[in-house]
Length: 338
Image (tube, rainbow, N blue to C red):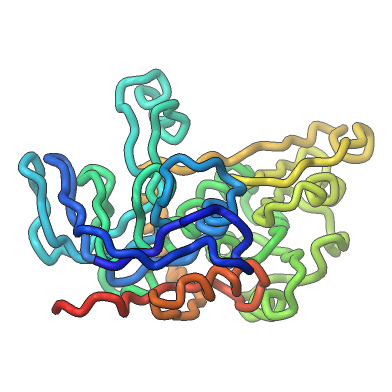
């Protein structure tokens, strides 16, 4: 099969990704073999490719918003049949026995593993996934539409929960890419007033189209104090900016897996009055189930831009440069077999 591999992590303006030939992977006893039909392009893929995240698997194939069809079933797997449509997300495996797993916080498992970082992901014709971490997908959405929900949507949902937004509250979203534009739809459906603060004019236009109360530059103050804020942009300089925008008792959730250094915080103007900063780490399978159910019920829809899988490096370059609103999705044009 053909797959994209991170040959040498580095800026996507160079050539860190190489198209390689590999054997079709053989699923383990507890795994599924998945023929990839579409794969969302997530900012975490950019961090893996450019080396912001340390190398876990040399030559890894990125991609963890995978929609595909079951093409093989491990000997110990039940409940899946050939041809079933499934989703493969970021969280690939946990130990299941540590204190974190036992209390329902499997996203904090010290032995957790991740698709497209610890194991090869969806920028390929085929990938594998432990069957217990494969997500049956709801009908009503095609492959391209549902792919961004599998990470951008799930992590946006967890970030919204971590931000502790009160009913009818005022929410600020810093950065407005794949995850934020899905999170905004959830918050709006729940009755929130949403203020978007982001660098891109196209992203600001999308925010207003979706129903945001305002859309301005990331370093501007929103038109009213915020009860909650979520930082999606991987820019540490925005942490004090967002904290200054919070009302008393407000919560800032930092949603990215990577963040540039945070500058020194001024206690009285940025942390006093019981403001909180919370990080967001991956997601649990329960998060995924809850979000996919909510998204179907509330009509959450991704704004997508399809790229052939053969042009994956260009999709990452466009993501890095902010050339599109919403989310990019790679559509598999590498497979020749039916």
